[in-house]
Each structure stands twice: as structure tokens, then as C-alpha cells.
Image (cartoon, rainbow, N blue to C red; front, side):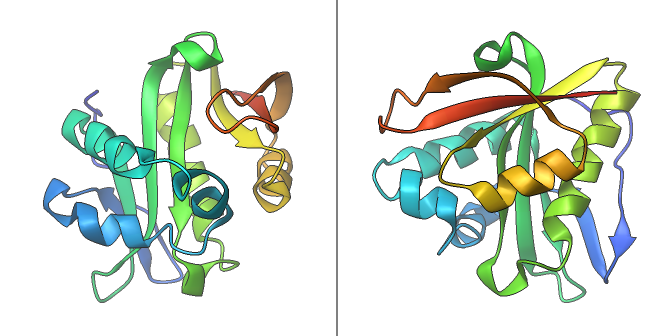
Length: 166
């Protein structure tokens, strides 16, 4: 997926830029101590694959601080069969020392703006039961429940597809 422009945001001295595939190992560390890592990626070996696929496709972006350190990561897809073919935020993480500072909200704002500029009428994301903090953030940004399904990889949990009208 190519974007019509390299959008950048400046807030709290954080800039959103296209992710560099050469820095994949740095991006993995963003997910350390996160609910996503602890409940999902620790039990599977999918983090490396998710990062590699998004970086290769040019669909990954990072929030970097003024020193150039990646403090947040986001990947998106223009069409995801898991969410009825809608554009989807496929991965989002903020470094543990930077959580609670608005970086996740900034990354989500970037995602919403890009999908809107590309002409989509809706965008989606998936959140799991074990991540109520993320669900609260998504709800506050206007994402609404479309449907839920049981997680097929780790089982015992429900995934919730949330959709935002653009």
C-alpha cells in the first residue's frame, strides 16, 4: 500500500514516520511488557511474522522521540478479511516507559486520517477481552462494536471488531 504523502505529526516531541525494516528488532522491544505481548505473542511466535509482513509491505509506521528512538509502532492494512474487508489497524504498541502519554492516541489519529484521505468510509481494528485499557481508548475515539468472535489462536478469549465511520 502506498500513501499519497508521508504524513507526520508533532506532539509531545513525537513524530510519526514510515518504519525502517532494518530496525525490526528495535520495534519488537516496543511490545515488551504489553498486554498484547503477555497474552498473545509470548504464547506464539507471530510477532516477528507480523512485523516482517507489515514492514515488507510498507504498511508500518513508528512514533519516534526527538532522539530518533522508536517509542510506538503501528501497522495497517487497506483490506483485511478478518474485518469484512475493511481497512484495519493490524498492530499497535507503545513502549512500556512511554505508555499513558498520548502516543497510542496519536498513532490512532494517524491511522484514521490516512484511511480517510484514501477515501475509505469506515476503518476497523480488533481488540481482545484481556485489553480493557486499549478498548477504553478505542471507544473514546468513536470506534463501535461490529461483532465479536472467539480467538482461534489462543482460545478462551473473545476478539471484538470495532469500526469507526470516517
